[in-house]
Structures are given as C-alpha cells and as structure tokens.
Image (cartoon, rainbow, N blue to C red; front, side, top):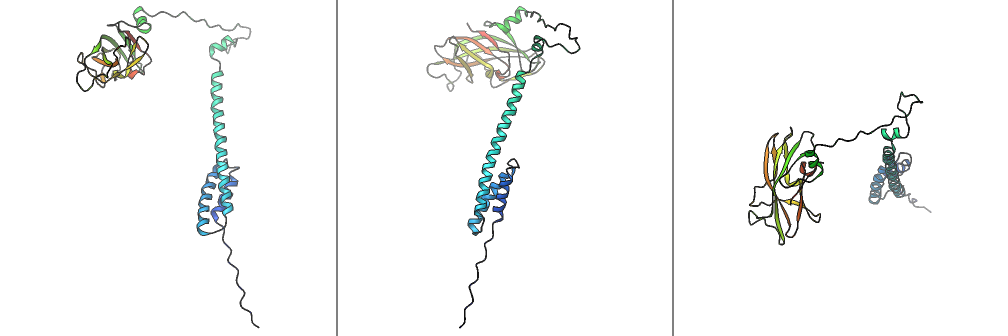
Length: 279
C-alpha cells in the first residue's frame, strides 16, 4: 500500500516593517516629549495601507502605533501650550508687580550708599509750568473757524500748522457722477497746511479728517469733489516751509448740525489731534 506526498505547510506571512516602527516610535513618544509620536502616526497610516494591499501581518501593531501617536501628540501639544501660557503669564505678573522708583521711595526703601540711619528720600514734584496762552489754546481748547493749530506727527521733526479757512455747509457736487445719497448733503472744509518742521510732509489729509455733529456722531471724508474749492486729491507732499490749500468733502445727513472738525497728521495715527468749532 502506497501513500501520497503529505501536503506542505503554507509559508508564514511576513510582518510589515512600518507597523513595527510605528509601534516602537509610539512607545518612545512617552519619553521624547512627543517628537516621535508624529512619526508614529505617519508610519502607522502608511503601514495600514500596505497591510490592506499586500495582506501582510502587523495590522494590530500599526493600529496601536497610530493610536499611541495621536494620543501622545495631542497630550504633548496641550502640555506645551499650557506651559507657554503659564510662562507668559508669569512674566506679565512680574512686570506689573515690580515697584517703580517712586513706589520704592514711598515704601521706605533707602537708596544704595545711604546710611541706614538716614531718613528715606522723599521725592517732591515740582509744579508744572503752564504753557503760553497760544499753545494752551491749541492743545486744550478747540480753535474757532479761521484759527490755526500746529500739529506734531509721528516723526519728531514733523510739524504742520493747520488752518481751518472756511466751511461750506451745503456744497455743490462738481459732477453728476458723485452726488450725495437721498437725504444727505455734501459738507466741505477748506484747509491751509504749512510745513513748519524740518521733515518733509507726505500724507493723505482725507484719512486724518473727521466731522462731529451736535449729537456726537462722527463722519469720515469722501472722495467727492465740489465746486466751492479744489480738493486735495489722494495725497499731499511738501517740503519744509511749503504750503498747500485744499478742500475736504464729507457726506452728512441733511438735518445734521455739524459742530466740530478734527484733524491729525499721519492719516489720523498721530497722537496729537486738532479740533475746531465750525459754528
């Protein structure tokens, strides 16, 4: 009696290398501050795709490495975010709580080199000198129609004397294309600019101009032109000692009572702002 050849065993399936790497990198992520966790996620996703395509082993390792990678990456990101927020907060608290020199004197802290028996140094503030009448009116009180205010710009040597020459409460549109909307009117102001500083003046006066009505409502300038004067246009450039004259137009409600005009250099970003009464 003869027997046939026994059937052979099926070859063992190989384990996907990226799956192993994903699991190892995910475990190392516990001690690498999450730096290897990102690689674990990438390798795990690639390994899962290869396993589905090639039918190799390692699906569990790839899945475990991917999950570990995502969890550790999110955990470490949260940790570093909280640490950075605490660090920034501690700097801000330290800066706010640091006493100023005046506060140190008030608390009785003696200056270096002064014997301990000496009394604390007391700072006495000198009375502030009032500016001349002309300067005080420019800085503190609104000027009247026809008045001049010298304004400072962001640059230390930029100074422009601004004069509100006249106002036109109901200005006439210069063309048929740019007209005020129904219920509105054009309000125009005519300015004279004189560069009193050493720096050249280059700016768009429209951006720094504001009208204020009796109720406190503000109005910005528009690009319209009127027949009562020549507009500044887009920009003004002048050297030291030069003058420019032009009109700025606003669109306001027909019933609005305009009370004030404000103007500042550097397209309105300069700290000093001049104010004129329009009535």
